[in-house]
Structures are given as structure tokens and as C-alpha cells.
Length: 90
Image 1 (cartoon, rainbow, N blue to C red):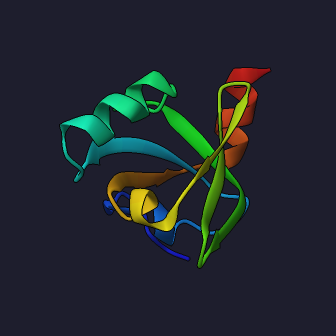
Image 2: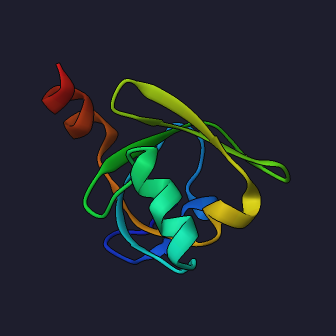
């Protein structure tokens, strides 16, 4: 998958890839819920399961969070290098 710096929905990021949150297409309550879960603009996350018809499991920091398909469609991200992200975490 060659996304580069293109902004896509989180639902389009394949298993094992990492991305950085750019924006949200959801309403105010959805954005507030994401912020409470640690999913904010500029935060890197990695897809650990999915995407599938029922949603995606992402890792944000040390937490794994299950997100439904409707939510992942509304989170806008850019693909980042997974090795670089793991290097920063370690």
C-alpha cells in the first residue's frame, strides 16, 4: 500500500501498519470520546487487528483499543513508518 502523506481514514490502514492522527470527521461527542481514549491529533497509533467488517483494534501508547467500523471511517490519518515509531517507543 503506497499511501505516503495522503490523508485517509483509519479503516483503510492495513494490519501491522502505523499511522498518525490528522483529524476527525465525527461530531463533538465522538471527538471527546476519542480524546478520552488517548486518540488525539498528532498521536501515532498502530493497527494490531483488522481492519474488518466489524472494526479495528489499534494500539495507542500502551493501550489496545477496539473501534467500530463507523468510528474508524471518521478518523483521518497519514501512514507512518512502523520501525521509526517502535524506535521512539523503546
